[in-house]
Length: 320
Image (cartoon, helix red, strand yellow):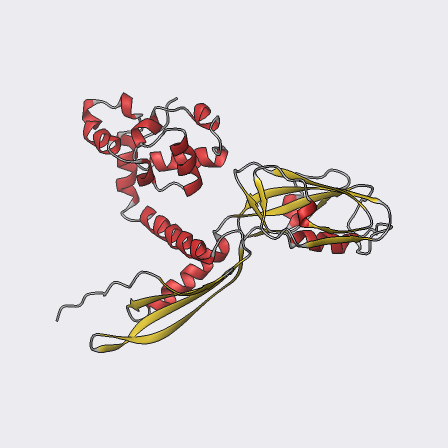
């Protein structure tokens, strides 16, 4: 008797309300509901990048246990309120935002002076209540990252006097859970239906969170298809740019030359930055140097590393 595994359905939207989304995947082979659900949940929490405040400087304040005359909240409470502000950061470079207000005033995240690379998802978030006629000034550093990073790790590089390091919760996910139930497929009643519940902080949509986590899982699994001996032989055979390829490598070079930029499966941000600069093929990318790519908007060191690794998988490289 021949056995084959039925392929699951694409995700279906059960409901989407603001920052909360519920999605279902049907026709999963028995046991695959738990396998896929647990894997996606872990990726959603650990691998989706976000932005957070990593350090704060408050005028005339040396440490987090201080109080500020004329402000109802303690410094500790102000820092907790700052952690509740949700940011989107375009680009890989850290950015500084500033606050300079005079009381009496209810200070919210909307009062921040922010560069164009920063977007605040919840500008109504309360920061402090200034009761007196005083000036309140602070600046905060925002960085991109993954997961949760304790401030002990962050302070290794930032030890300025008066700079208060914060624990950084970079993840844009508030909640991610899944449920598995049995369903009928043909004559069998033990197939799985996977329901995924995702709540974000508003900097990405729940649908984006699910899509990106699936893409990350596929990308990771693709990398481990085959065995290392084969990969090493392929890498040694050609680590050249397309225009330097010899006749021996011509078939591989021609195949790569036909590839579009999207085939490299770079992050959407990197792909967009390259496309906007007129680079739409793998062949065009290999004619660029790392230095020339860094001059493009949205391409930093992380993007260069990502591009180099993707080309290396094809036995190609950027121009020296």
